[in-house]
Image (cartoon, rainbow, N blue to C red; front, side, top):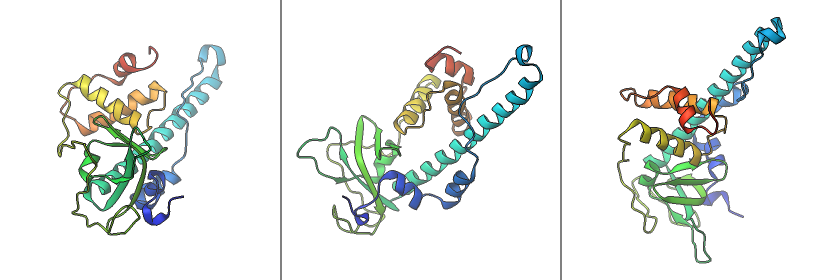
Length: 224
């Protein structure tokens, strides 16, 4: 069993160290529903309008709650990148000789966290069993570090600047991979395609992107 002084898994780190206002807003937001169902007014008459309006409302609530969670996760990653927090983990594949190693903070430019299983992937690297603690604390896997320390993970080239995809298609694939690695894809491409389109148009407003319906048709698991 790992003591708290050695760090906590990503899910608990999110609760402890991410922006408390974002976490409060996430907890208080209505859960809604990721599923959208519509009734035909030809078959169900007046009942269809009320049902469809409620379905849209629940779907909107679910999307808003997911956006709050995404922002909280991004805030945690920023704290890891800044050196305010320190992470340790074990590189995949795990072997009998594997040991827990501190991660360079620059790695969080390419690593995308999976909160559910406390892992992170990116740039061909997967790190398992991640534990997070504040900088300056002392754990069993290293002495106290300052925010300016740059601990290393062996045999990993971690570019200081991420490589920006050159085409819209590459940008979309990169975002899908990011969400998949972080466990953020729901499998409902009606929802996922809209979230991907919203995120990319917000973060890269100058890029000409296809509509979310085109993203769903091309990258989703089933035709629109």
